[in-house]
Figure 1 (cartoon, rainbow, N blue to C red):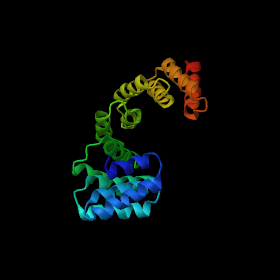
Figure 2: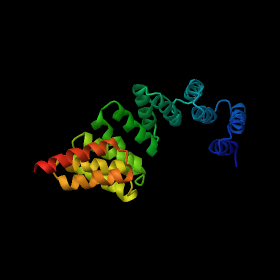
Figure 3: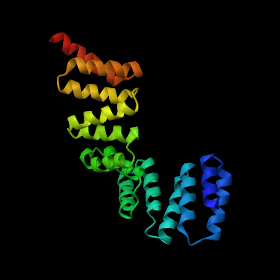
Figure 4: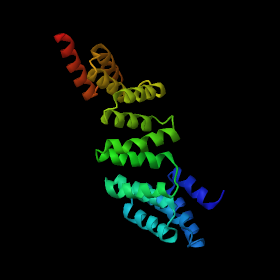
Length: 220
């Protein structure tokens, strides 16, 4: 196993000092190679040392302006600090440079979501689901973006896909209840809200949805 792979393995095992020592060796042996700096930046990011992580990513970019994973790392760093315009810029650059990973598309979509630009998030969240079709988080967020963009029928299909992967997904049930309620399918809405509450009894939104639905049923 080469040093980078070993260091990454150490990082995954939370052996921070061992990983740092190996990444340092990699950089000392290959000071003009951006890979060592990117991986050390990832380690520092993992440690929540954002200031130093940023310096390592930027050094990698100085060595190779086409280092897509450096831009992804920097975008992730900004995303974690809720600096969404800067995150957006770096994620887009990473994709422009050819990074074709589900995470970068997912986080770019979520960056738009956090800025309430739901329609702009759709193509990126869709791409994330195409690259990783069994990822519940990507599917759910794509469904949510569809619903927030008034594509309720499409959103409903996606929430059902989420449930096919995870039957006990309270938020997918809740959102199916919202769609059903919006379309005056009151009995169905109540079933979904009850299911969300069975899975997560403290689900406040589902409890509110149930209360509203029951009131509408009593009126009819």
